[in-house]
Image (cartoon, rainbow, N blue to C red; front, side, top):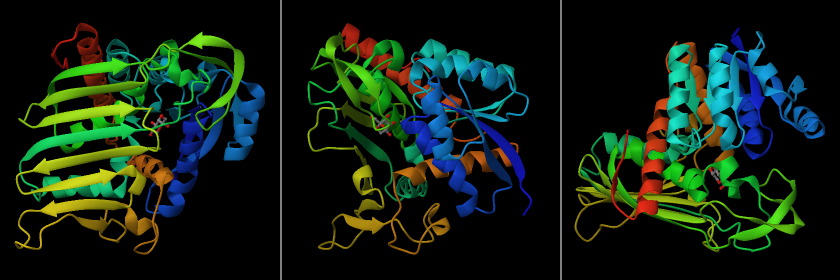
Length: 387
Ligand code: SOE
């Protein structure tokens, strides 16, 4: 099939740049029905030597060091913003002004005000937009969404989300950008709670009010000498201040009457990427855990008495979302596939002249909850979410 080509400019070449590049490269090989094909045109980053190496490694035609020049190029159709949070707003807004499709990493921005400006920019310039809330696109999570929509677990009472990691427990772990407020906006809150808030929005509904706490355990760390693309880097000898939260937890009331608890930390030793939610409804419960991402646990009260218990569904059959594009049943998929699915869905939407989902509106809703929790933690009170 002759596909329409879409020239991609990727801004950022570290961890997320790597994940997104892989997604653009793989997507048409596994989803050949797509009518649009991304072309890896240019990758952009500030360090020329490193961005040149990234271009070669990930298969981009060109590299560049000035994002303003890149987003203004007439041959670019789609700008992918894979930078740290402080650049999401300026790059997305400028790209929108140049009429580009914008796909942005999460969280949408470093503040609610910035997120609002980004939404305004894409609306005013009439461009399509999407956000990488990639966990929606794990087949087991998309399948959970279907079960909920089909009423399988009934009316939802509880959402219990935890996102636990342990990669900064060592006090000598360097002060990487994710630990600096001026770059990341917040710590685990924007990095990890953003994911579970989005999942809660998608699976349960909008949150009315929140009551939160945020905490920093280690306040000084060695400065960073050189970053790697695996979250860390080499530590220098001087010390610098950690300006973000190491852990953030909150209670939530949903508009539909459900209640929720959310907890994110990078200090849960042994938990590497433990993004788990449990949803309890009037007819059953659902559990997902990214560390076992091909499985979904389901409990049904309608099972015969004496036979009740959580069953583990291997979400690897052709009937499950996205799975038929990959391998036979039981031949599991991984983290990187979630990004391929984000890109797949975005390209499909674009080819039909529709808005990708999730998009900047979902990013904005998430940002409103993030900000309400920050206010709540600071002022030690319940706060309404300013959607
Ligand atoms: C690091 O905490 C990180 O890579 C996040 O930045 C991602 O968004 C999350 O999916 C995995 O952990």
